[in-house]
Length: 250
Image (cartoon, rainbow, N blue to C red; front, side, top):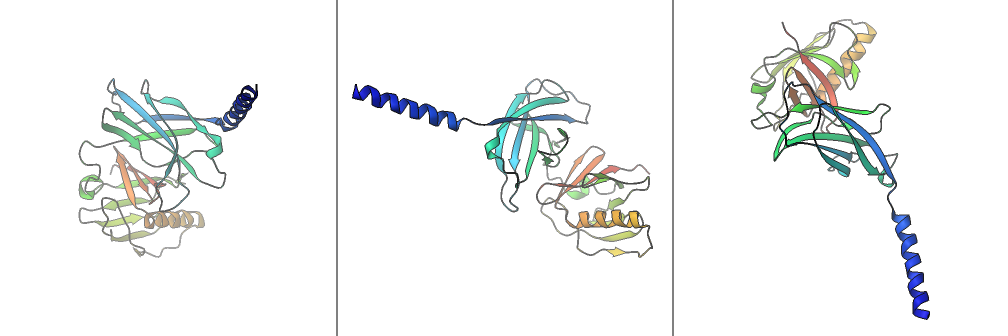
């Protein structure tokens, strides 16, 4: 009898412990698409991850991940995660990729805020067949790029800031009022602008001047870039989107 009671007590303790240890599962709805008009191979798979990006200079910590067969474009998935792993003081992002076997076909151009006000919607960028770190002169030089967004805020008028880079790494930019020029700094596969640019000193309307400052500050913080067709995203060292450009046809 004593052994029976002891075993019963251990069973009760185990059940209580197991119950308390159960995950407090929450669901994050993520919609993924891409702009290119191409069909995916039958074995295409969508990989979605929730990351903790709170600590600068430290690799992101994966909170949850899910891989599914890519059945449609766009595709919406429910990413489940343990709510107990989320700290309101930390920063979290969602990234996604599309794979065909061992080949990555599409990837996230920048990290998306996981717990913002809107549902998570990700537009992926196509991965080039050649080395992802295509030399700058073959990638974005010789093209007039026009800004569409600065850190998620749309440009305010029909005369946006522009950027042009030549094959030697010299750049010229229009900030909405003033013109800027300089030479890119050496960068291992990414992109880096100097802290100081040569610039004109025009008197600008306050609103335009504010956007121009945001544009130049974003360029100074640039660390890498992703090109997708006629689009370009410049990102910082943490993978956050700084500037969105579209190719401007002259």
